[in-house]
Image (cartoon, rainbow, N blue to C red; front, side):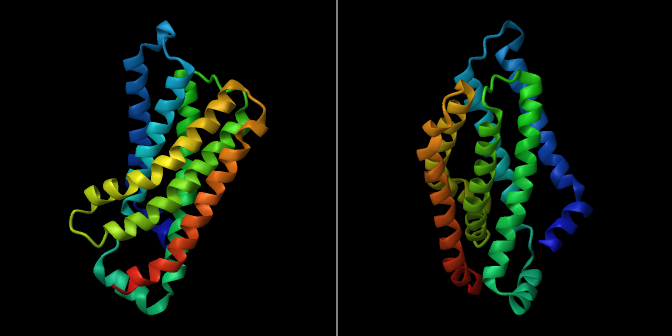
Length: 213
């Protein structure tokens, strides 16, 4: 994790590039929906936000293993365990996605308005979404890095993994937008937590086989 944070601090163009992507996407949405006429409904507001967060996470996490050259991976192979590598990558990507998701939400709400009635529940949903995207996409990034066309492979592999989680997140955030009782989101909350635990466990068990290849 320390190595990844140091690289991110030295190569600020990666993080700044994600901020530019988020800012430009939100601004394009503002221009496209004609928000001055108040035509953007709450479900559309919710859906657009998660679309932005989804593509931001794919672009941010895709470089997890792709940016590592063969010599560096061989060096890591000789000094650390594969479990340590995958867990550190998941933790780093979770921190990165959490920062990006919070910045995205603040800027999105500032530009497009904030119809959220239960803000703490909505922020909890964003937190779970950031962690869920990170846990799922980190392992997929490791698999895609072994292929030549890693960008396309990551997009294909991530779709069936992310969609069930995305449906739960959209429903939870819609409940927070409508200000419903928090017990209405309990099933979705437990499902997302279970998915995250399963993905982390599977990554912990299976990544050593991928690492040895």
